[in-house]
Amino acid sequence: MIGMTVMGVYSVAWSRRLAPGWSELPLKTTLATVAAGALVFLDLSGATPGGRTSPLALVLIPLYVLAPLAVTALARARAYGAADALTSVLYWTSAGRDAVRRLTVQVALQRGDADAALGRLPEREGEVMRAQALATRGAWHEVLEVPLPEEGDGAFLGSLARVEALVALDRLREADVEARDMRERWERETKGPIGYRSVTLAEARLDAERGNLRRVRDTLSDPLPGVAPDVLYAIVARAADVAGELDTAARLYAEAYRHAPEGRRGPLERELRRLDEPLPAPIRRGLGGKATIGLAATLAALFAAQWALDAAFGPYLAGGFAVSASNVASAFVLNLPIPDGDAWWRFLSYAFVHAGVIHVGFNLWVLVDIGRLYEGRRGAGNLLGAFTLGTAMGGYLTSVAQANETVVLVGASGGVLGVAGALLADVVRSRASGDRALLRGLLQWMVLIALLSVAIPNVSLWGHAGGVVGGLLWGFARQGLPAGGRIDAVAGGLAVVALALAFSYVVRVALALP
Picture 1 (cartoon, rainbow, N blue to C red):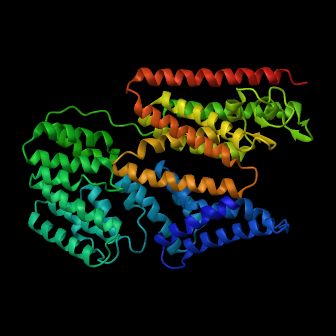
Picture 2 (picture 1 turned 90 degrees about the horizontal axis):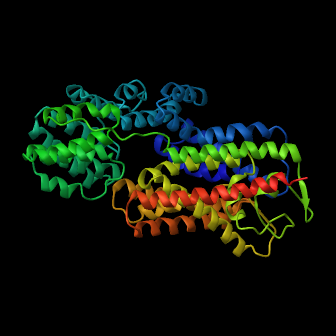
């Protein structure tokens, strides 16, 4: 409930940007957040909530706090029907459904799914999204027929779609007027981030159409958070194309094609065929790389083995504490009479066991989400190296900070945060627009983890902090080593050997249990 309260605060701020005033979406999110906070207060004050609050705590609160996130995840998986069904079940007014539909439409536009976006436009104030979807489809005349608002930061997205349409129809003089009007409006009114991004892209498109390659490069050299790489590549490619630098244009069109979602590849394919260039293989966008999925699957299998071991042997008494059989075999322990309690392998093996389904589920979710990013950048060997060093440092920092306390440390959080720390080391030195946004997200998430580690009993602050430290050490050290697959393969091999050795000792202790 503490976690739901903290997440609810963020969800309320998010929902108020999607929906006006206190309409259904922000109202339900706020009520769920307040209810979570009330349950936390009752628990901390010693009161016991009645049995009737159980469905509220276990179902309704997470449902309405996490609903926008769940709808977004379903849309990203192209399960648009499931996203629509969840929206209809949870929200009953047109204002509430419109607010959540905006999330679905935004994801569809990012994927280039114009039909999916057009089929789910909100009933009210959906003109800007309609213009964007029609521009994605290439229906330029229809874009110009959409009546667009002129107020608010988001209105600039519709104006950008108009500039794209006018440029595509070779009406450059009108596009110039539209772009100047956008610039004046932005400087006079909002000066918001969406407006800045839209004005910059509109001006860059016009410069590209006139073949001013140097100016386009200068304009787009500064990070533009939220702009897909294929969009930027395509604009610069068009500038090179018009300027007569066809080899450069071909390379840039190919990069745009590689990065573009399926719905935006059509125009790029036509440009590549016009230049007699082969179509490159698109970048695959899965849930994660093979090593990420393999590591997550291994942790899930180990949790199943943990459940079977605990069911077969039951708890053990150690120093007056009841300790499960799996923790006797695998957990990192301090100041408890457990066999091999101070062994080196326990600095790794504690990642093999978890405190419950929610614990392992959260760790696997974050591992897949963050691990696929880091593996895509650095490869499988570095992913395994960061996980292993983060796990070891989580145990080490716990042993230093809590040397005189009784500790039973379990869970893969240290390793997962090791991967996050390595990813943080990668993006902190990057100037790419996507990495700037990723850096902010990682830092905000780590602050949230730190707050939860302090606020929630039995959550290891030092295990989490050690994981981040280990990941940062790995990430910065890897940047200082020569690039190449050999070093990555050695790092991954050493990590696998260390984890396998730790697991062999766990099996030995488990087999010796009475």
